[in-house]
Length: 163
Length: 252
Image (cartoon, rainbow over all chains, first blue to last red; front, top):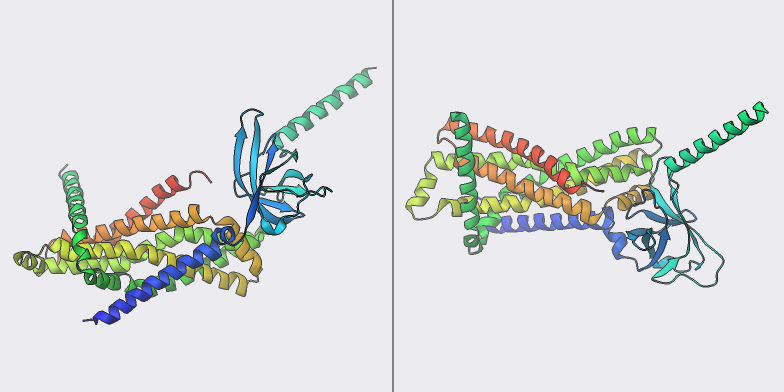
């Protein structure tokens, strides 16, 4: 029916095409390529509250993506979140007194870590900890505070009216 | 009641058949050409339908995704949407459905006809185990071809989405790929998609082989078995997909 050699060649091509497709998916489509082709170093930061920050969230400096969040753990002594970030080696000159903030992309977007560079001459090394951080803004807390302030203002007004 | 009994009996027979198919795997190593020939029949001959469907599914995803995303000003994330839906869901599922129609039905018809024309009985007369000789290579070939076909489907589909999104609708080229790479995780998305397609390959070929082997050996019986293969495979794939998705993506 079919020649043995034709079949073998066709199956070989099939296998090769499948592997090429897998390679394409791994390198071009998934984050595998980005993980492999770049050297990187780790830095840490402690936050009182990370909001809804997730692993693999971007780390940005001046809006440029320079790395990603690798792990998020809870420090059980200080009850703070310890966030480990992996920064691309291309961006090795980040001042040691950099300020880390958890920001939100757009109104409803995902949360990411924004870095504000300080003026120090020393640069962050592998394993260093960012000292100065600011937690995520939690919407419920903000609304609660706003309502609380409003109520306070009203009380003051009614009191002054009564006098 | 008798119906339930029949269903249970069929289920039992299918599990017994699967174990005897699996027990034939060592004997395949001595005759690799049996397997290669079946990979050709099942996998290679399905390449065209898989790739053509993949391109069109990807292109449609690109179009529809663009219309919806551009309403929210988020058309830049088109690449991620196309890739995620293809790699996680559409790649394995649509490939399995096409595979059941293209290869599964052919398997059932072939084996059903072998049974109707007593070729299987003839093999047994020659002291050749028909399950090891006929069914095991087909089973392995299906198990092996499905993930390769699903990967091809996803890759070609993403290229189709790229063609429509970037080429025709003017989404930014860099944003298309970078959003995709930021959103698709190798372990979580790709590997899970491949696990799905291997599962579907197992289930589809198992159903096809069992229906063929269990068919009533008449022309009507074979035609009914072929229909059942396609229907049961489609139901099994869609049901399993829900279960697998629930297990795999419970926490993002």
